[in-house]
Length: 437
Image 1 (cartoon, helix red, strand yellow):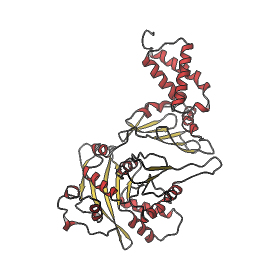
Image 2 (tube, rainbow, N blue to C red):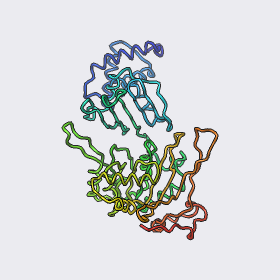
Image 3 (tube, one colour):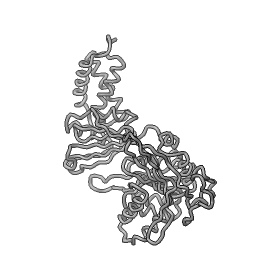
Image 4 (cartoon, rainbow, N blue to C red):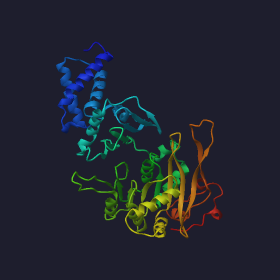
């Protein structure tokens, strides 16, 4: 038995020796983090320590194995950050600069890579197990870690600061509506309203900026879909974690080295329409698939859900118009707006505020067309309150007092929402007289 824990200098020397000995033994088959590779590396490390007659306490062994695993088959210095449940994003801006996002705030990390080759080894441990490569001819790669976390890699000459890695962490625990309420991201009243809209098969668009929590909110909203409905999900990088049993999950595929085999979101949306879906959930519309999605919403696939990058509900409408034009059809703008107005019932705006918190800030009904303009009506809106501490954002979500024009549809599905949801005094005389869809 060892006399005690290894002194830090001896531990560091043992770590460096182990890495130097094990790296030459690494072949492509053992790169990347998975149970088989981790078991292989643990056996190699034990054999090495036995040859040195080195006996370690359990804590030293666990720490040594973790560090050697990160360095040899893992992702290097960012390994501990990826294991930290408080981290939501890890960004490597070249060898010497790493940023992490914790509780919505970006901070510079203490760790760094030694050099470009060190970063490239971590990148190869990410992409080689997936049969991918990154080099001068293919400097951009999207990938996914074994836990589902989303990875984007860009290397020189396109990345001027050196090899760059951006990892959006995949939550180990599925976020629920109760979690969002406890985080003050949404109120119980809005949660009940959105649940009624989903069960009543309204088409909903979640709008928000980058990193605002759109996908998390979409995931939670999707949990309201009844268990007995067939759901087809379409994503660029699979992140949705629907708990329902009858779910068909689809994900895009990159092109092969010869340029063939690429499958984009639009291909999958079109294919989903042939799969007898009762609900279509698209992780994000960012191109011509917006037209296919709108047509699906207008042709019997009520209750479809998607997200879009936009900073307000009005911007979301403009964004959808632009995306439809990307489909390649020369459609008049009025026709596009009619498609949007008749397809989309509700826009839920999600924002990341300056204090790092993520909140639903607007819930807006798409009421229809007046002339060439799409009419929007806020049902709920976040009202910020000025505070002396400039870091914090305080405020509350308020009902506007307007009932949506689709209220009868909610009542037909068994939801009779009253003043406790829409606000006091929202009786029949104050009901908004919008166009029924």
